[in-house]
Length: 378
Image (tube, rainbow, N blue to C red; front, top):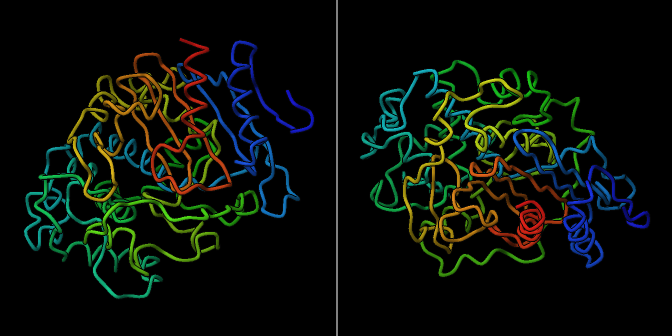
């Protein structure tokens, strides 16, 4: 590996082309610190990391660096919600109001869990104005969402819920399980499988967090519609202080996960391997397929693109945003992070980075790394 660039990790010779792409991104000035990991049948077969974890470039991006993964957190939440269904606590087709009665207000009584997770509920943002600090009060946010009328007829279209879907999923999870989603993640998956991933980061881990360089331009959303305005275009559309202690400690199952790439790649292998990880059952047989099944497909009302949604995951469909696997699923995070799972090959992977781009979906950097991996392996 390149000594000058200080690339570290695991890279067998058959995957040298992936390392070359990874290195090229640094040479082109597209990275400050980054990591890309691949698993096959749950075993890490590639793990590359390089660069710096701070903007001053004084701290090395190393194996212990935790990176904010923004909306890739939704993929973790999707898997955690599937575990509730496995336990018989709820069904995808069940109305949310049956477990959260207040949610049934303002014409939402028939909205199902799978419609919430596939962004069909019409609750992609909140009317205001209000102080963005309100996002740090989940009870208040959930009360507003429960009282809100949908912005479009639920079930008629998808419209990406960048922040609100995490509060919805988190409240449903809490009412059914009794624990917060982030606490259950650590107790049920993080600790038993030694996965370095978190939703709600303890203060003891904050010192490992990478600093993010924000995008220099805003994402291109197309014409500013009301759903897009409320999702992204208001001063209160998202919490502030996204690198502070309050943000890291908070549990927002749509937006503030922290993780390493190998931990994410191994977690996503649960979907690539029909619910199995390390020979243990995380999801019952057939449940992974249920998670990935298409719930709605078409032009999204918030993202300016065609999207095929599973229960909280984007499906490759005709877009090939997760490599050539026709049945692959995954999620992107603000600025470029990416996770994916391919049930046809048993491949799963994750890309994390510190230099954010303006892409909400389909950042060219992880797409190029995934493409190189498939060319080498398949």
